[in-house]
Length: 178
Length: 147
Image (cartoon, rainbow over all chains, first blue to last red; front, side, top):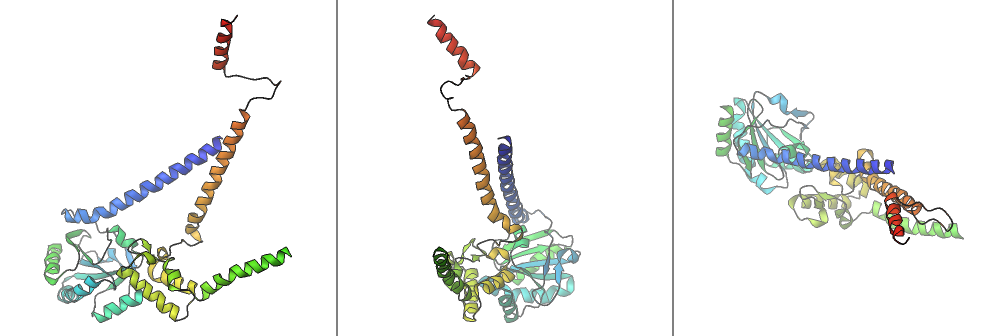
């Protein structure tokens, strides 16, 4: 009987542990947009993701020392199409000034995503977070979204949930560079 | 006679399963594939992401892909969580085994408890009966009143 009680107790403790882990993880991820909105500068969760076009990966850590504009998108997302031209125009304007634009494709078919990039003439690097695991750390649950990361790897400025325009991009890039 | 009947039954059941594997339908797969941004299966969602996946499935069915090929292609694009059922390999196996283990543990606990309970049943006639000390004391007190 003692063995059975021990097994039952271990099972209950294990399940409770899983529940606590799930709640803590979700709170931590949703805390990032709230921290950015509150003017704090949380560290941008690190990642290494495969390029959408061509071979290789992009590692966020390797971009330290440069301002990063992180735009989350998907080919099935209509607002993403509406902001594509402004993102590309801003990239062309800022790329020579130590600013990197990084498009992160979210829950999307790779072939559709490549077609989207061709159609909208996107020339900045694009990576894939095929199952959303990386972006869940950023609290992302929809697209488009845009984050700004300063030279020290901290999330700064505004966090956009919805399309961005060139004016908003420039304003936040200037802030991240300062 | 009986083995022959079993063989006929097995073939009758295997037929539709094999047909579904080689000629899957969109409605069947819609219940087996998740919409990654809504947390439901495709048949419960009409979101843009779900519509994209339904279009991909339809195109692959038209191209003659089997159910397994279609699922493998979706996992390649969206990751393993795109499937409503976890795979039966690696860590995902836990999702299948845990409920069975839970049932086995519950059955073992019940069996042990039932055995202990049955031991507490009244002893047969003639066999010595052992009472709890407290009960025995109260019984002695009650009996003493009649003496």
